[in-house]
Image (cartoon, rainbow, N blue to C red; front, side, top):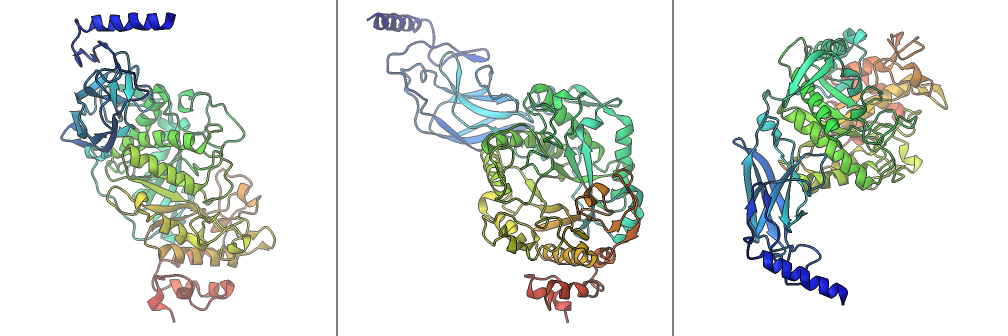
Length: 572
């Protein structure tokens, strides 16, 4: 009886308030407080807003969708305010209760459309915002939609130069000191690593959205030299953005992350205001500096966010379910994507995975590449489809043996989309899968795929030196890739053997080395693979150069084992 009496008093107070407040009114930035409630309060609102588009149009942001499910009864606290409110939150903010609405419109089932100023380039810019529809119950907002982000940041980019595709898909991890060898080899694609933690410092100031950031002048000038050397010779530069550990850059790491021997690199932090501001400013700075505007700086056209991100060894954040991990990665990737594309409209942005398509996942720090891609694609479709792309690493199994064509014998490969591993032996499993409708880009095309890291050892773990096997494996893999229209590039790792890799029987180089450390590696001797690599993409030489490999592989014609073999009409 006591609780019932208190409830009657509350009803009376609410009824009295009705004489002084207007239903659905608002004051300033907040809706008015509730006025009355006589009906049974619903557990959840009826309204459900599903977004269909979020884009920049003539200096404004247009957010479109539809409201379904009905309207929460107006004689309840939850339903008495007749308006639908649009909130614009920063990517790191998941709490609608502490925010103020950006725009509103009367609730009505059917189409919903908001149009608000972008405020581009100002401290009030909405370029990175996520937009959420809410109702107001008198004391707080209640979310009735998933968030959606702007999908076409490229329309704001000052650099609109077209993407320049090399004439060859052939790529190589090159030692800068041996760049002349790279030119002789006819390399079209190169890889560089840019660790975020190393480039912060002093000497270069950069102002972004009203705040000034400082970069290490000496290190940036080293990158200027490297990138310009490559791009000024027509090589397409692929930059991998990495987050190594430094005690001096705590804002770059996800809250609560500590340095660990279980990680080579760490997940970028977009979960706090400071981290979000740092990563978007650095990405914008790099994209602008390496836009090609200055030949002394050079041009980067492909940006790869992290390395093999389905394995936390390379992108550590701490034990986390796949769903939570992909949610955090998608949040971070979107910040990078928006920063890069709003600076250089036609640059491409990738993430990379290893070859463990449906293999080795533990649900905590290792995830299947296929399931990671599926969940990432689903989130981006839900939150605003963007043109993400895939950098894949299809090493042989195991990496200590070069011949991948017998990898089916390991039991780890199949022609099914659930194959544990996808590498060169069954590469079409990947490209067939990426043609699924739910994985296509905004224009309905298959996303760009590059093979950004893979190599074949010349030092078998079981048989010792095997340079001809290495060369045969490369030839076969290159022909498979080059005959597949959905692969843009094959970047071989590496030009010169790395001593640390050789110690594990992974002698991937075109050259051997006498070096004992990975610093300043120098070449010693060209391997059997060197002329094969040089001539693999040359019509007049390629088939003669790879003739030796047929006997090793056990075939008579390349076209017998490679569908749509590029050089089939020249085969004898």
